[in-house]
Each structure stands twice: as structure tokens, then as C-alpha cells.
Image (cartoon, rainbow over all chains, first blue to last red; front, top):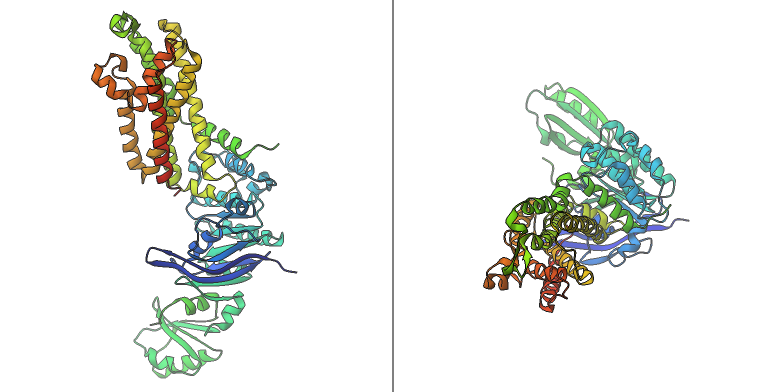
Length: 303
Length: 248
């Protein structure tokens, strides 16, 4: 039996004339890793801040395990832990002191001694916040979001500033949270992260949910199952390529010609290119990815 | 082992203040050092008929107790809190059961502790080194002390509330520091000021507090007008602070 952890229903929030979020609705099942993806300024952070009770929507309604975050912030803080972008701590507080202080806020905190090792800060426990690197501050911030053993963990830009190894460690941590029944809301614009971790993803664009599906579902629904790309030395007629059967999109991207389309379009495209007397270089044919699906949904008209 | 969140926050903020030797020097060390230096001037130790038989140094004990308050609550604490807001520490705490208000409370408690330490030190040095009397009306003295502390904390709260960033906060805090030092009598004890000036200064929070502390030192119950002025400023400034405060 699944239980709904987070319900967002018709959320709208504007700042002055600017509508940040409009008619955003989705629900997150307990124990799910739910991704919120979108370009900068799309309304991702506003949405999670409304869920965390930091912003009150103009209209709409949010429930987190039945709690209204806009009226019962105290109740909310006991079930939801959030790692905020750019929020810092007192300059001279040590890692250990921060975790001890945060532990004291909760009735049944997660043992911080274990958590500190889990985020790889064990050997830095007596270091002051201001002396930590950006990645270490980020990992401490994640640990503080989790020390209250929240039922819902909101991680905003989880892996910003982390090196590749630390990213993978945080990914393992997120999966482990899910395996222990914690619901995770992951705000990100790292496609690989979203594709690897999330059970479902909401793609937010211009303050609205543009698509909501599993990563596989999003990729399948994309116009491109395969992506063919290559370089050419001379001018090429992109319009002619676009008219080939099965081709969904043709664009010129960082010096490469990129053709997206259904299976089999690759050969047709390459034949056409060679017919025009041009030899494609650095040829690559890959499966469509979440990137493609994401770009489909969030990019304006392709060139 | 469970500690209440508020107690834990007070302990943490206390440790953090202990890591700020410069702030501690200005709050606890500086008033006492100034008292010693002024006390070394022979004429400051002479009882004066114009001052109602008191010596200047006796008057300075109360003024320097207030100086510690001005530095701690009017300057040091606002700078820390403005920094917390700028660094989004307060916002971060909004997402925890502690909440930012209790962090601010913890700050006030910690600075009040430092101010009490500074006051005890000033009174002890005044008594031991210069024969200044301890407060003859201790209850009235304590009452005045608490009212003055509340007034200074509300001044600090207004500075914190209205400063949009640390740079402006710094300027405001400096303006508070120097004007309040003057009205507390750091440059010239209020009792030694010309009458008209002393009357005007008597309507400022620190000017009224200086007069009331001195009366309590002499064993009198302070004039109600002094206590009312100090309390009135606290009420007005607290309202302004609450109205204008921003968590982020």
C-alpha cells in the first residue's frame, strides 16, 4: 500500500508582476525519489520553498503527510528536512557542534556520529564551518537536513560543488534514504543525476509542470530515440536533412550537426550527407537520453 | 542525554562568542580598563560639591556599566545577527523546530551574560581600587540595570531590523555607539553636564538610565520619570523592530 507523502495542488506564487509558479500540481508517494527538473528561474526553488513552508503560495494547497506547511510550520519541521541552496552556518561553528545543535532540535534524531562518517566529514569534525571547502559545506548541509530523520527530505542542488566521487557518495546516500522509506525530493539540473536516481521526474518550465513521468517514460516520449551527431568541414543543408523521414530535429550544436529521430534515421542522414559530397567526421550515434527529452520540453524552437 | 533546543542554542552561541576575543575585549575588558585609566587621574577621585559630594570616578562606574551594554547590545549583537541574516542562517533555521526567533533569544541571553560579567567587574574595580560605593539600593539598581539592558537590546533589534546589509548595519551601529556613549556620559558624566543638556540627555534611554543607576547607587529609589523614559523607549523601539524585522 502506498501512502502519499507530498501533495501540491494548484500552487501559484507571484512576486509582484512576475509569476514564479503557476498551477503546479503533483503528488509524491512515500518512499519515492521525486525529481524536480528545469531551467534556472523555472520555479523549482519556489516550489520546494513553498513545500518547506518558507513561502506561502498565493493560491493552491500543499500537504506534507497531512500537514499544511503554510499554517503549521512547527509540525512541518518535524517531518521534513531541507537542504537549502546558499544557506550557510555560523562562521566559527564546528562540524560537530552544528550536528549536536541540530540533533537537539528533534525528539528522535539520527545518530550524528554515523551521519558525519556517511557524508565523509569524519576527519573534519572539529573544523569550523568557515574553514570548510564549498563541497564540505554542502555535505554538512545535507547531513543537517537528514539529522532529524525526516520522513521527507528535500535536497536542492544536491551535488553542486561536489567532486565526482563525492557526488556518487551522495547518490548512494539518497538511494539508501529511499530504501529506508524516506521520501526524497530532489531539485536538480544535472540530467545524469536525475536519470540515475529518480523514480519519477517533474519537468518544470516557466512556472508550470511541462511533463511528469518516469525517466524511461520521458525518454520514450521524446521525439528522438536516437541521436546522430557529426562534424562537417563545409556548409551543409540542414533543411534538407530535416525533411528526411523519421527526423524529428536537426540542429547545429557546438560545431556539431545533431540529428534526432527514430531508429534508422542515422543511415538515411549519412547517405544524404555523403550524396552531397561531404564526409562526416567524429560520427556518433547514441540512444536518446533524458537530456534530449528535457531539451524537447524546455527549449524553444530549435535552430 | 537530551537538551532542550533553546538551551543547546544558548550553549552554542556562548561558545561562538567565546571565540570572538575582540568583541569580548570591547564588551568586558574595555569598560574596566577605561575605569582604571580614569581613576588614575587624581582630580577624578576628588569628591566635588558640584556633583553632590560624589567624585567623577564614582559616576563613571555606572556610565561604564552602560558602556558595556551599548557595545554588546547596540553594536556587537546586531552585527552578528545581520551577518546571520545575510548568510541565510536565520532562513535555514526556519526549516527546523528551533526557529530563528529562538536563535535570536539565545544571542540576547549570551550577550546579557557578557554584560553582567562586565558590570560585576566594573563595580568590583570601582569599589576595590577607587572606593566607589557598591549600589546602596541593590534592588532598584538591578531593576534599572534590567530596564537599561532591555532598552539597549531593543536598540540593537532596530539596527538589525532596518539594516539591509552588513555595511549599512555597521554604519548604523557606529552611529548608535557614539551617540549612546555620549548620552550615557562616557565623555562627560550626565550629572556634570550643564543643566539644559542634562535635561535633554535625561530623555534618552541611556541618559535616563545613568541618572537612575546613580540614584540607586546612592541608596535612593530612582525617579520614576527616569525608569519610565527607559521603559518607554524599550516599548517603542521593540514595536519598531517587530514591525520592520525581516528574516531574510
